[in-house]
Image 1 (cartoon, rainbow, N blue to C red):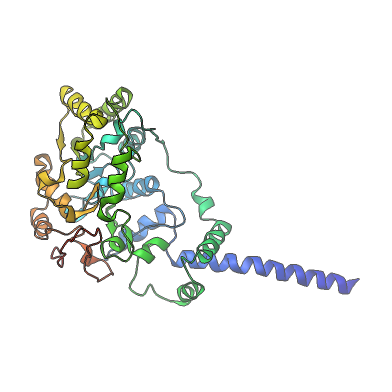
Image 2: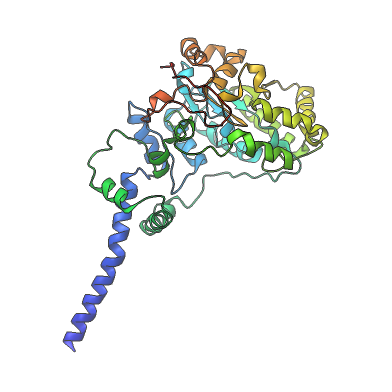
Length: 393
């Protein structure tokens, strides 16, 4: 009997090892790759004197990350909006700056975000990029008043092991990579945080702005080559580019509440419509009344005495298609051009740095040289763009 118990105990111990060893290995691998909580990421990034990007493949909550960054920095200048404002860079400004782009993806989400921000700190000025689709009457509007809740669950050892196993099975990572990561005693010059940041050199910098390193250098394929994806959205009236006749009255009312909240806190707000690349903008114009709600939105805001600088047509900024990340995300140079044409922002702008960006026309990521990837920017959109080396330092 004792022998059977010994064998049984040995089997249980073996099974436990089979379960615990992969969990422990996955946990150490994810830790080494910088798959940390948002507050841990922010603390690490702000301690570095080099560019360390963050992009998690395990749990990416832009809302929570940007709030943690905002609270840590307590900036004078803030960029607010969706991912379309994420190319404002901290070195474009001489006061402290945080880019909150990606945490204000609808009016409802923005309203909750602004309240949480102002309860922590009041900046001097907010640069707010207004997306027309926030006011589309046919598009479902979503929002939340707090970061996602399952942060701890996403970082649990079991969840980490299952995620790592999934990446192994679909070929996104290899056993050799896991072994190399676990046996490496330093970051090898790569301080980026998160599996995705390490793999494709894309993610958020310590100022909250976003770097498209892998896309710009063609390390990964562009999802909008030739603007095909954006043009398809416009042709079918889908995925943010839904059709509509008039602006949604409820969203406008909520937007006015957001503006009142910011202004009553004594914070200056400067608004603009982020730019589209030339061909997508022309394609929208050809749709005529299908996008009637955009003209209605602009007219109603003007009638209410709300000033929104209209940069929807990127060519009006002097920005060509080669300076775009995709059909509706302008790059570094595009946003330097935009910032130069915002008179209210002039007191906060570093003119010398802005001039350095403007001296690199045709590039989507003029500050690419600061990344560990050293390849030159490619014609990643397949538009026949001739890309030179960036000179902005």
